[in-house]
Length: 265
Image (cartoon, rainbow, N blue to C red; front, side):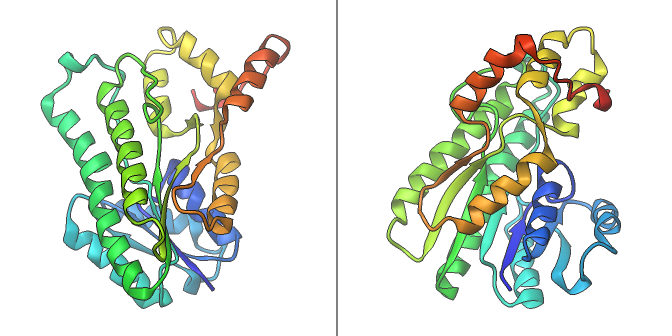
């Protein structure tokens, strides 16, 4: 049985990826920064899958020693790591950059860029030693250069993720470990809905866009997992919300009453 590791696997798209890997018959290890968060995530999983198929570990992805412990824990529990997903990430409320506390955007860059690069470094070298493996880095708003006012640090970090992944994939091309990206598109999670909940009135346009383009994590994750587990190509870009899908949804929007947001408010 093969094994996946998902950083930041306790909520949103990360938790949905954990469930989808388990549903696909894989062993899964996931991480979070606090023990209490891990305990809550374990309680949601217990009783649904065999206990010997999953494990959760505390890990701050900005700390190399924590990442090594996460790898070692997964390896000890399951024998090898076949797919490593760098999903852990932070964002902020939709606030103009100059109004943000510097500590907030520093944490976003530390986690989303430094943490992802450290995790890739740890996982790649150990997969190289075991002779195979795949690493997938989570893209997000900003990866393709699009901009939304008030999310400058987050978008900057995700633009960096794309450059880093493309550059590193080129460096290791032809080797036994492949590197790629996954892009879930607009997914309704606690992170994406925080701003809407705080002021639904000011977020009317955002709600309209979400109702056209967004999906729930449990809709997107099975597709991403199916593509990751089947892929053998280095540099792969696995994307749920393709340009064609965006165009179709906007064309159909005037005739559709799709409402995916209201139950989250």
